[in-house]
Length: 625
Image 1 (spheres, rainbow, N blue to C red):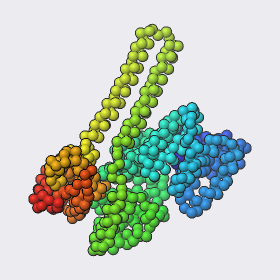
Image 2: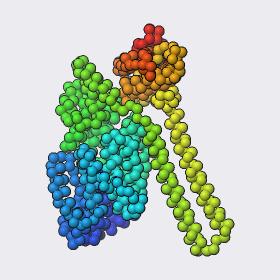
Image 3: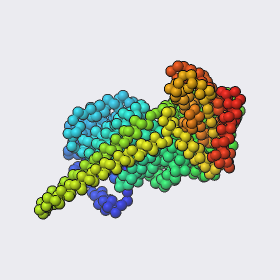
Image 4: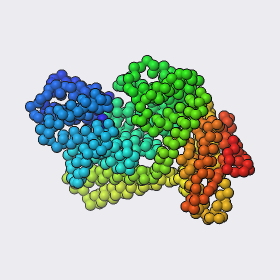
């Protein structure tokens, strides 16, 4: 999708806008069609301003030059919205009109631009195969390096953006990354800084899908900085995406700060539906932090809006139901829940289905409907088990580092080019001595070597930082990481007056396994039990290995009762499974505690270890709380 938004108010841009106001005082001549469209597509107008430009250009059709008519039709395609039956019908009528006009102009760039737009619209409707058919002739160009036309490069780059989204939707993360990376490089070659910045958002989406929130945040910050010279609308969209990444990472306070920072801009540029989304997110996050009075203020403002979008209404009902449940208004919570249940659940993303099952389970528990509670919990367990639990970060981290390395090489190449040009200019201006030239060359070489050395050091440092937080054998958090997380959660508990729990786990008779089968099988057993634990807990629960056969699970915002249920599910999952290549049986003992408000990290550790000790003394293969 091409970004079409508002210019940022700088002095230079004020001058440009004044010039444009003078320009708009007269009719748009045919020769200006391309410049008008280009200005909109390169991020210098708001959406409403772009719609006005389209209407003005359409009104003056037909032009003397058939190419201008074709350009207007290709531009109009991006404003189609086939998300409703009426929208699909209007889009089909548009294509019937546009295609003959564009083909009559016999301009390959415009034909391909329309094809990319068609692919984007098919992707929006979920028709991935049709979208790919439109893209194939554009992306399968053998001599890509020989293309120098900025327009041509941008069209091919847009095709790769759409391809990236299709691959991401299908779960093909590496292919999605490759497409987004190619788009970024093509936009850079085309000199299209606006779309290049938007390509960073696409890369961030991939990292978010792979739970690489730190990497996503880094890319989004770069995109936000790059878009400062373009328009406010695109900046707050990046800020919204950045807030979501922080939310998924677990930094709810930072997410709230970002949503708050863009409230005014969203209210200024978006309809009630768009503004309602920001208020819904702020309400939801404050409920999670137990800041109920603040959440209520956002709900009060939400009630003044006219929300018509079905998806926003679904999120609104979710948030209202959670609010009512948090404030013990059970009947109102059930009423909002019924509206959610009546919605189109098959189109929900996995995260929303998980949220729905959690809410249903909590409401069932509150109303004493044990059968519904059990059914929703079983569905929730099945959903969690089906989710990808072992997404390897290494491939994407490696690709990301290579991507940054390539960017660094490009910067170095530019530096070398500029240096050579300067040397030539100096040689023309005056006769430089041999030693002066040699000095310049040695300086450039030293700078180049230093840049490469610095980059390698940074890359190596990041690599070891990642390794320092992961257990080498299992890939989960190591002792240092999980204990730091425990301390962080305990601090969050005190700030937000919420409860969290700990589960300590020890593999029963592990020494006997090592003695009988050897350490290799012992390692296999640890890995197998780790995988079983990770597949059983929620995505938000953090699992770490604190010793040889000892594990710790931090259950943020979970009471003792919920923690006991989770511990029992883990115990059963381990006991019922055959482990290692020898298919041996194994059991575990578990100690469970709810963290008390005023205890220290060390005190909590001693208590949970004591409960684990009692579980082992009680016969093993048991949970003690």
